Picture 1: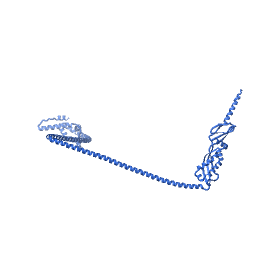
Picture 2: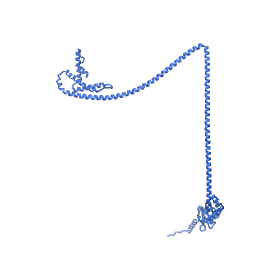
Picture 3: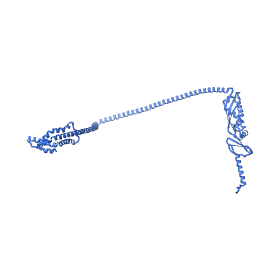
Picture 4: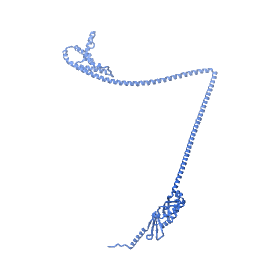
Amino acid sequence: MDTLFIPGWLITGLIVAVIILILLVKGYVNAKPNEVVVITGLRKQRHLRGKAGFMIPFVEQRSYLDIEQFSTDVRTSEAVPTLDFINVRADAAVKLKIGTTDEMIARAAENFLNWNTTDISNSVQDVLEGNLREVIGQMELRKMVNDRQEFASKVQDNVAPDLAKMGLEVIAFTVQSFSDEGGVIDNLGIENVETIKKDALIAKAKAERERKEVEAEQDKLANDKRVAADLEIAQKQNELKLKQAALKQEADIAQAKADAAKGIEAEVQRREQERVAAEANIMKQEKEAEVKEREVKVREQELDANIRKQAEAEKYARQQAAEAELIERQRKAEAELFETQKEAEARKAQAEAEKFAQLQEAEAIEAKGRAEAEAIRLKLEAEAKGLDQKAEAMKKMQEAAITEMVVDKLPEIARAVAEPLTKVDKITMYGEGNASKMVGDIMQSIDQVSQGAGFDIRQLLAGALGVNMTVNKLKEGEQPVIEAEELASKED
């Protein structure tokens, strides 16, 4: 089996590369923005803040400084006399941080390398308290209480040089409270309260006075504006009246001018008339005959014109009156025609209703008459059956005897036929052919009776009529003109 051969130079190169990689990893330094990495060792001390760098491993080392700001409370451990010899205690809050300049970082590295903020705060307590006590001894109590900002500024200015020597800087110094054992600060508060109350009352009174002054000023302005408005209204009304008076004056002047012009024109016309009259008189004196002749002609023309105008006026009046009368007659005729048409339509409707009712009544009467005629026919048939034997016995009798028998029964037949008509008050017939229809119905009834009796009643009546007429003519000594057979044939 062959053995894998690795050259020595390759192994050496790999070892060197690994060593270099380890050195790079160990020597890489990355400083955060809120910290400072201090590198010390072979070379001069240097630091990194918020950036990356390299150091020589195993030869140089790195340390840290926390440059974040931190808070610490400072209070006096015992009462400190002020400038006015009042013992007070003070309590304040301080914001500190390590400075970021190279000098400040170098000083902080000498004092606080690899310290946390709590240790730094505890180490500077005595420095802060000493400066606080020093400033208290330099100021009066009233000024310290009333102007805390000035007190804090003095403490901050007084402590800044001492902290700068340690590489620290003061961000903020705030006084929390002052206290004393004798109640002097409370008394100052009472005095201030009263002063404040007095100032408040003064301010209130001043504000009230100013408010009333403003109100008075506003009332004055409002009154001035109201007076100005009233004055302006009065001025406008006065201007309006003046304008109206001026317009009326102009109108009166124009009217006077018009009246004067009218009077002048009238005077001119009068003078012109007088002049014409004078000229006419002169011409009349000069040519009296001619004037008289012309006057006659003029009078004739005037008379003719007046007569003609009067005639035309009378003619026009008569025409207007005739037209008005004609229009009135036309309207009256139209109204009468309308009323006549309406009345005719109403009468027509009423007549149609009466016609319908009478037709119904006539049909009822006709039906009743037919029923009664049918009853008579049946009665006559019954009687005819009883008279069969009598008819056999009378076969040899003459026609006159048969006619006599029929004539004897005619009143009963006529009564039976006419009895339904006695119940009718009147019969109104419309149109043509109704009378002939009624007569035909009567004749039809007679024919039905004839059929039931077995002989022709009309022929018998015609024969009887012919015999009577013949007898009457013979009695009078005249020749008969109409034979019974001819009369019967005519009836048929």
